[in-house]
Image (cartoon, rainbow, N blue to C red):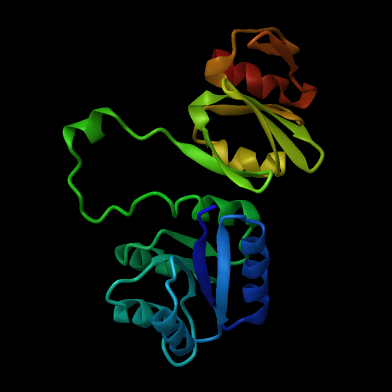
Length: 236
């Protein structure tokens, strides 16, 4: 499995510990060093090939943006900060994402899933890019592999305690995830929570009643507390 080698540059031990724990949950990330300041990080970058940096802004000695500006060929960078006001400046530096502390795991996952996507540096799209937009996808850890799932192939997602079952036209996978976390990742991609245990693709619904929807021959219940929202979303 291809692994992205990463470092954390963070002077707050608790924040560094949280990021370390999150990275351990992602099979394709390999944490090489935790650096308490940017000077230490510079030594690491001279001696190791690093693919991804988790960078705090307010650091001792050299601030995060100063450190970033000093790099001639920087790896991918995800900013981690307690301050929202630096986000625009950060994206001017072409960072992958900007995470505001306290960082939730689902938000962390959304950020690192962007790492494998190429950076866009003032590129004028070709006509093919304009008329053929990229299909959105997510990666999930399944049996020590990183599996790509295209969102437009998902029929529905079912919660199974601490896991979710993602049913697609290519089959089904089971991965450790909370339904509420995956719901947040899918909110802008035509998915709908219809039950405490189910999220469905609106495009894949073949029929519905007041109590259930039908997708690929499976009848999926609509939760009582979700009923009004579902009817409004599907018939409005």
